[in-house]
Length: 420
Image 1 (cartoon, rainbow, N blue to C red):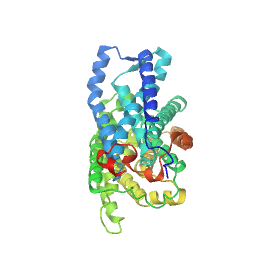
Image 2: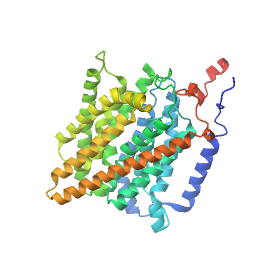
Image 3: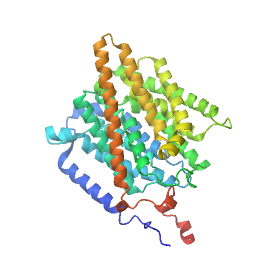
Image 4: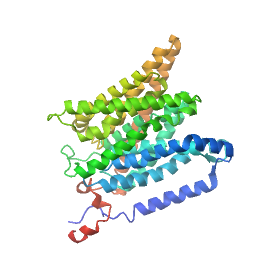
């Protein structure tokens, strides 16, 4: 019997890539310019370039290697991450510069704008993690473009109507991306996913490469959380405090995740999935709560709680979401990014209220803070639903069930050509 959909991407992926890339080149030709102030450029280069490199390594190497854990989907995990990131960064630069274009007629790009674009891209890669292996490259590009559009819109709404600081809006990328991806995985659920797909497993080689992605993310996460602190706070000490807090939170979360991984294992052994992902939960939580964290022990406590929630979530909540809600979250983004992100939001709320001497101001902050989360969740989940229903259309040629989690559907394997 002939396959329902042709395996070749020839008539789907190249037209989309060339159309988008040509469009971006045209936009950059007429509306994008480089910052012309030499002194400003030198200052931005000195302050941002090294940290931009760190964020760039996280997005490409960190997320790329982290996505290689599936035994027959490692080519796609790393390759599609690079493809999506390269396209998404350009789109994020354009969207983040719309306001500048409206007021000045041009989008001014500098090191800071590239860092912001990379962080928006990271949000889209988090969302993609929820449907990893169950989509084709066309789907992934559309998901990234729509997710970044929603994330930038969410930041504009929060800054315009609730006067939320830019740093606090950009750090919501974990929550926005996780719940966007969660709704995607719910809409794109495939019958039979209750039983683990035969190719949805890890072997020694892919597991090792995935842990290497974890190491890249773990090493460079302090730069990720501190790079934009000076946008809202000119005091260099705040940036250093963000680095220290992130490092301590990551260290504690790594130790805690390992401990609870053994405790929750029926065999009393370490779980590779927990080491790959839950060790990073402290960096997620402290990033969201960073503006309110001033003491080292607080950062360490956040890292402990984040790793606890993440490990227990990966062990118990992920299977529950699959069986009870038909939500097949491949990479466990809810446990790794969503729940630790909400924990960070709650800690920020409590610390800000505790530090406030004015009850009226504390109540006002609490109301605005709660509205910030509600708007973020509402927008991310609604856009995730819309994107999911859009991708379910046969026009986009969804991947066949038997081709899920399989590189052979998209990549050349000359040594297997004679076996088909």
